[in-house]
Length: 413
Ligand code: GLV
Ligand code: MN
Ligand code: MN
Ligand code: MN
Image (tube, rainbow, N blue to C red; front, side, top):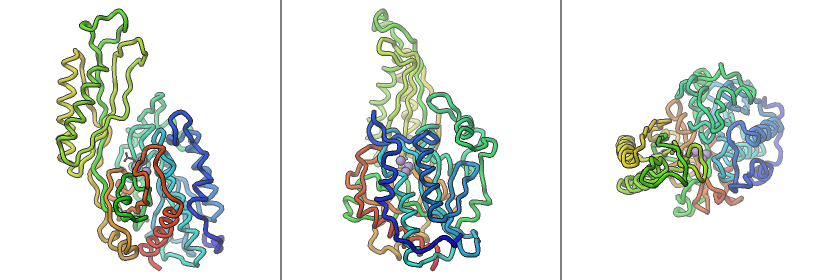
């Protein structure tokens, strides 16, 4: 409750980022590896709980593992609440800012407003969503999908990580009853809007030469698993003519995917993960799994692209005496953020340009249920999902100030 919200010196985003910079560093890949419910991600969640508690925010952790830290109204009413926040999990070898910047900026924005004695008319909650990246269990934005019913809880429970651990097992190990995973419409109905601040993940704000942009839309995107099966065999005794090598089929497909995607303006197609089974230097693989990520602003074009890729997979598999399957793991349509909320933010932040993004976010999932908006913060490297992702301290502070302004504009004075 408001009782503990004494006006204190606000904390800068950079000082909050410094508090977590040692958590989940990946000494092999560089950058950070914070898969959901791994030791480093749990440490980050603990750090956030402590930071929220130190600010007197009222903490709830729901059945889906989403943390909610409430800056309540004096009367405790939560209807019409404004949500901000982001995620703390990362891709393998990711940057420091993708996710944590939105969480630290939310804390800093609340500090700023309180230090100025400004209180929105609605309750504000900082949300921390688990498995935004889908790096451990394969489906991105798993927490927000569960919350909103965008994924069947049975399917979520049975998702497996690379070691064979199910999401149900990982949730239980993190302290959540997997039987209780699933939609929470009553909670979602409390929210009037969600505003997610995020590091910009391309070079949009470098080109526009500004520190902060307002998000307009998220490119439609999806993930598919392509599996090639052949004949596992000995690398030394099997003549080249006698092989049914699924690695060769996968390699041919990857080259084909690049060619197909380049032929379609605006398309992006990536194979960033390949798993040969059993994976030995002197072993011809018996199976190869390749994960495909395809994005395009027009969802019909995405579907058509994937069908071309499927046909190519069958063709290259046949050439190698292998078999291929292509299975959809997730598909998110193109999302335009709420026009009226965007207008409100544009009036409040007249210098901020409007930018779309090719990256997926929980804001995209929540957009089907409530007005959502995003703020992007300049990334001078223009690189993300990589250790080179970067944000200048001064831009991060601009971001926290912009988020505070957005909270007051959307949450009412
Ligand atoms: C997540 O960041 C994604 O866009 O893949
Ligand atoms: Mn990301
Ligand atoms: Mn992110
Ligand atoms: Mn993302």
